[in-house]
Image (cartoon, rainbow, N blue to C red; front, side, top):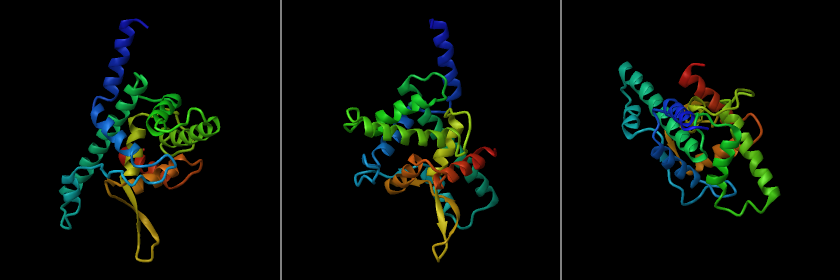
Length: 222
């Protein structure tokens, strides 16, 4: 490809993910990768990640919110989720040399193997790598198609925003421990991420699939 074509592609990714910050995306990637051990269990040395800002949390905890406050919370939450999604995807795209801002499966696989599994001796274990790649495929399908059974099989920033929305929400239960819905929490703990990753890696329609679908609808009304 000549320089003109390369510049056009670079312009494409910059336009597609112009609201992203690669450094923010890299920081998010490092934190979540450190939340789990090779087996998927919680890393006791993992750190909590605040997906939304402290000011958002403070306003959300105010019991006397006005209609204007509620609207502000919604707008700010969506803005922060979109920024983090674009930043994470921008970092991923740069890591794998993608110039469109939309990752296909093999680019996603390359990134996840490098960041999630390269710390371990996996390359010399074909059977284990086959298992890992199936888990990655399951995760890709859930994110790329925002929790639906089929889609375009590309991860764009809307798909990533829906996934991060899912990570930012938790289930609500009543006094009898019965499920009553979801609530925005905005704080991602290693324990919560380990559970989400486990469901993401599975080949079934589960709670993370539902939360991603909900996230896509809440974020974009689609």
